[in-house]
Every structure is written in structure tokens, then in C-alpha cells.
Image (cartoon, rainbow, N blue to C red; front, side):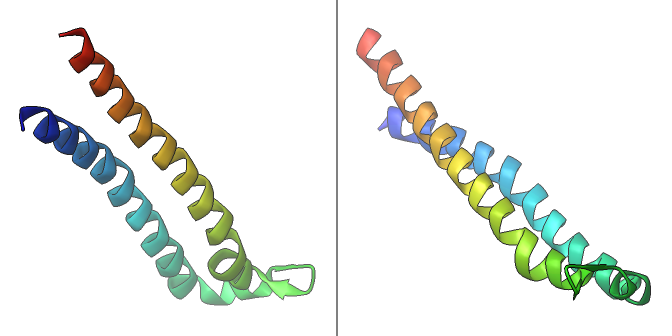
Length: 88
């Protein structure tokens, strides 16, 4: 039971370390678009306004990349703890 708690605590610390900044990043994108909407809407990339790119296109590859990295790191944490337990 102690091993499970150790895994849970490390993964929770890691998840909050990634999740909270990511959530702040997403909210800040929307805040920037809201506060500087006129300026951002004047910038276009391939005939789409910049704010479309930020909230509809760019956020998805960032999210998936972070997700793939997070899952790999979380699995590495579990494997590390499993090897520590096997050594005991």
C-alpha cells in the first residue's frame, strides 16, 4: 500500500506541475485575444485571423504534444518506482 501512495504522490505532483501552467497558458491565450482583440484580428496567416490560429489550430498540437510527453514521463515514474521496489 505504501508503494501505491508513493506513486500517487509523485504523479499528482507531476500532474499539477504540468496541468496548472498549461491551464494558465490556455486561459492567457483567451485573455490576450479578448484584451488585444482588435490588434490580433488585424494580423492574418493564410487569410485567417491570428486569433483563429491561436484558439482553433495551434492549441491542439500543443495539447497533444504535452499529452504524449506527460504519459511517457508518468510511465517512466511508475517504472522507476517498480525497479526500486524490485531492488528492495
